[in-house]
Length: 232
Image (cartoon, rainbow, N blue to C red; front, side, top):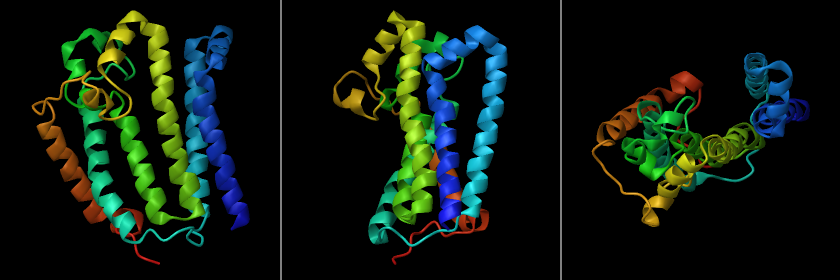
């Protein structure tokens, strides 16, 4: 147990380092040395290898003694947060967003300020964060804390790193976009910097809830565990 937990910890640290460190000055230095194409190819291979190691280490690590008892708290948390996570996930892949790869030209488009973008400019990152929180709380053991918590940390750090990268690339255009949106969900709406419109979101909400219901129904078959936390 200790050995497999150590391997999982090491794998997750390497995975996080590969994705976070290159976002700093190191990326610029590497690109200047080997070129953009070579860097992206090397990064992709390294990222896939690290991800595969994390998955392998997670499979090899048995669930240990729970750190806490999630009980009804975990059930309520999952009931509230997971549907929202799926709505954010669906919206991230069906809504044009300036924070995505190749989305720089969308920053001056009015639709980039509506729908899910008015709630958060990083719907995918926050979908992962909510997914992570629910699984850490519900599973409540060290294996889940490292595995799911690691992805949550990466998503949270990633949202701020993407903002910093876009601010550097787009300068004033990004400043105007950031002034009317927020990373933290609902913050721009609460502060009156964004205006919510239900029209661009209604079908995404329905699709997100449908996907959530399908995953919930088949969760035991797909992942071998019940989606409903059991009181210890």
